[in-house]
Length: 295
Picture 1 (cartoon, helix red, strand yellow):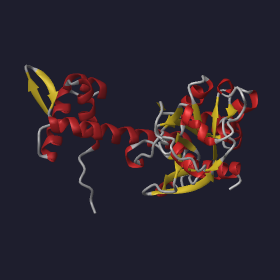
Picture 2: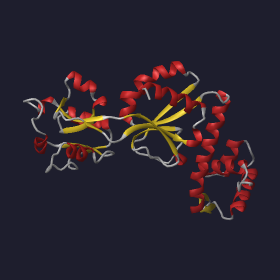
Picture 3: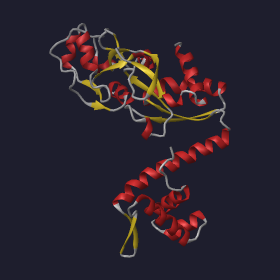
């Protein structure tokens, strides 16, 4: 079935005109005449059936329809350009892998291991961005993501990487007598909260059989790294994955407050759209990462 699409030249002219709010400057950028750009914009408006620009006191401004269309077209053109440049640079072999990672997992676990991936796959260029919550792959220029939670991501394939064990930790100065003898003593401490895991304390307290302690109360931090730093600073007790604070526990910056580890019901996953399963960069990174975790 034939797609309902205007010409690429019309979209390029529209995008340039949006950025400059001038047909003349758009024409200069595209090496066209001003009248050619004007004709392309008029043809695009005729195709869509509504105006995209209007003149207000001799100034070119977008209509409300034009504003929404401009954002969508900019994204389409950016993706098309990126795909074209990638194919030109790599000829379909390797290429760029844009990976969304959890910030603390990325900095503490993944990045120290990436040297091995680079040596094994010099044809793949990694581009890491941070995301702390699930997102829509159709709306983000991302090829894959590392996600913590259940193995649920609509329209995507999830590969389990590892589970985690969480334990309450804090600055040693808060524990002059050593680890607390009983988890109920946490009622006297500030509980540090991680905003993207709001149930972490409640789940740990329930597993420990502790009642009467509000697991939702306490200062909140968006990233695990911030929670770790708050715990080191003595702001309270945090329940954290042991593998992310091994270094702090070993060098004494943190201490276990209650020796009652809990195996999380969730896990870390490599997630990617099912449609990208056979892309060379995704396949190379997936196979390498699964080998790293022994999956």
